[in-house]
Image 1 (tube, rainbow, N blue to C red):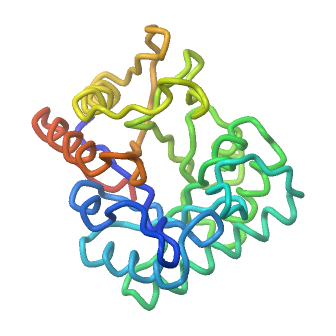
Image 2 (cartoon, rainbow, N blue to C red):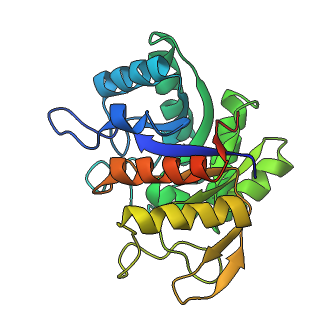
Image 3 (cartoon, rainbow, N blue to C red):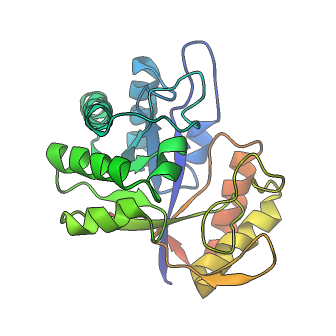
Length: 252
């Protein structure tokens, strides 16, 4: 693979609470998933994040999630699909407005946390997300896990479905992410993370948590911005890819 997109979750501070170093992450990634206020982020944070991304030449996408600030959007919510669709439309619209006054624009959508995991198999919620994105702008791609319901339904609806892998997360043998409640679910060592990504980008394979290997096809790889040592991991990933002759660039 000659080119790969690196994305990161950003704009996840809220009020006086600061999370992550977005400006530093922008030095390594090509796409930024900006929190839209439901799991994290507030209007001022969203605008400042969009301005920093624009200045760094980083593409931004709407990081939409459940309305769950207390749980950081990582809990599953059994929400009515129609309500979920409206929530997704609302979040995309909020980021579109704040991006516009920041000199940039929303170019894709990536669900967050509990919603992201739910729509791997939850057809009703996946359909709600796809319909919401299509109703706002059918030209917006959706990022999701390979083989997920949301990507299947996105393709059926005529939207671009972008397969994503994770730099700092462990995988089950079936290609799903190991639950954060399980030990070893999150990778922390920059060297290990870099090799994990290099294998994905150059070989198209992933070593699962049980030691087995499976094939993966990903147009984008996520380095979480809220993980401890996130900047060091992103820097190591960028360096390893560059040394291997892989160009980092947005999938847009």
